[in-house]
Amino acid sequence: MTGPAAEQDAATTVMVVDDHPMWREAVARDLGERGHHVVATAGDAAAAGRIARAVRPDVVVLDLNLGTASGVDVTRDVVGALPGTRVLVLSASAEQSDVLEAVKAGASGYLVKSASLDELDDAVRRTAAGDAVFSAGLAGLLLGEFRRLQSGPDDGVPKLTEREVEVLRLVSRGLSARQIAERLVLSHRTVENHVQNTLRKLHLHNRVELTRYAIEHGLTDT
Amino acid sequence: MPERTTRAAERGPDLVVPLWRAVIAFRVLTLGLAVGGWAFARDEYPGTLAPVLLLVAMAVWTAVTSVAYARASGRRTRSAVVDLAGTLVVIALTLTTQSTEGLHGSAPIITGIWVAGPAFALALTEGRDGGAAGAVVVWVAVTALRARVGDAEFGNLVLLMVSSVLVGYAATTTRRATVALQEATAAAAAAAERERLSRSIHDGVLQVLAAVRRRGEQIGGEAADLARLAAEQEVALRALMSAGPTTAAGRTDLAASLRLLATPRVQVVTPAGPLPLPSATVHELTAVVREALTNTAAHAGDDARAWVSVEEDDTGVLVSVRDDGRGIEPGRLDAAVLDGHRGISQSICGRVRDLGGTATLRSAPGEGTEWELVVPVPQAVRR
Image (cartoon, rainbow over all chains, first blue to last red; front, side, top):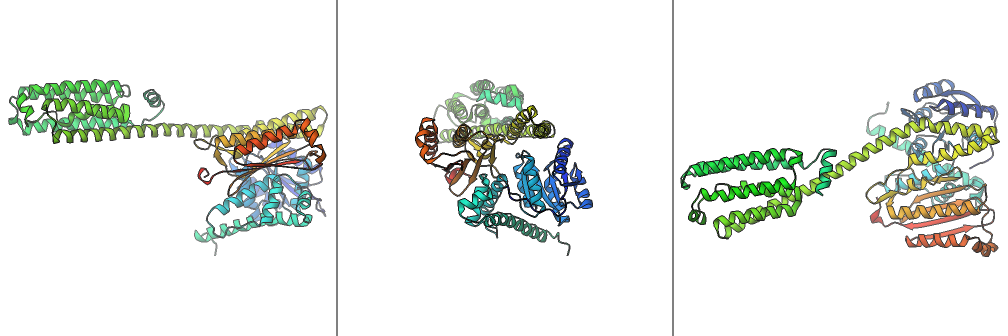
């Protein structure tokens, strides 16, 4: 979904994490040319966590396939350690289950690597502004995940409202927020809210699950 | 089956081998029983030399067959038949140890249950039927010595048949398990190899293709053509890497199958997990989606993009094929008939109907076209 770019007071600070130098440098250069301030790059998971803590970027543009370590761990690490930093997953479409894990771990958005520079630029701006970057691919993953949760034991799993399912379904078919608003006779803002809510429900559920796991296994600090 | 077994034996561990060891152990143990039986009832035999010679012959035959059954080349029907012939000779030689009157009466037969060995061996090579046939032959030979069929003989037959048939079943089941195990091992090896290939493709070729596409688009001109080619190959390679093989017997992952249709203009949206459905349904649905996409490519316009999305619900799967092209104007239906649009529509509707589902087309000028395919999948054939 494309929308109006968020207003920028200062340039967004961005960190690019990818294990392939050629790709990493290209993305960093492109984002720089579009007015973003690329403050750091990293090629592996350990460096990513360390450097992110030092530079505290607004947005981490993250490839999930980092050779030995998974970008999912980086997402969990960064989101947990740096409340002001948001993670935008830029990934190959082949890594579906990893993308879902990263989003559950707190990533704010997902863009396929084949996205155009305009799309990437817009996604970074929206992520920095606190919006979820909702591509068709992510909508499909969320629909599948809520569906999977509901087919399991009903133990406080989050449910989507019919309207939310309807909206996600249309997003997964590539419709823009404007087109969805027209088709469902809703305001543009309402559509955006529905989309944000689905992601929030999943994040909330994931935090509840993690807390429950921690308590059950005695991992809490107190 | 025997040929397949030979091949299986060459490929990896054969789970039937322990059963052969059991047959060897049975032979040796029952030989011991025969010796013991003779030693305890020596006065029931008219002479000493004949029983001893026969026991020696049994020992030699036990050694010969054990050596044969201990080797992969000896574990075959031919060996078991030779074993059966040798055992029949031993049974015939029993006539030298007892008088005919004694045998027709209740005099002990020295071989005892040792004679069941070849029946079990046949059961191992030929399964249930081989075991039953071997049991009948052995029983007929032993019963011929007694020259009568009473309760005892009938009981022997039942025991011999039941045990041989059971051994035969065990052998057949184990042989199938062996094949399944070898297939699973091969599949695991293939998956590991695929994983290794995927990783090296991801780290190398894909990164270069992505970089070429990126720079090419920025430079423009002829470089943009190169970028387009690189983009096509990038998408195709990624789809190939993510495509799963058949998930189980007769089932294929619909999500993986549809992902192969992705191109730079066509995005395929699926859940994270596999959607295993009957292979025939998957192939037909994939073909229908491909047809709808072909239609899109032909009618929607050059810049049109398309989305294929697949979703699972309580009753089956929901597949949507949407493009953002020109769409069909209401008044253009006749023209659509002329340019083949309707022919394709009918074909899509028909094929989905054959799957027990429904296909709906919605379209408006400037809004593109959208196919919605709803295909029920009975609960029984799902996960």
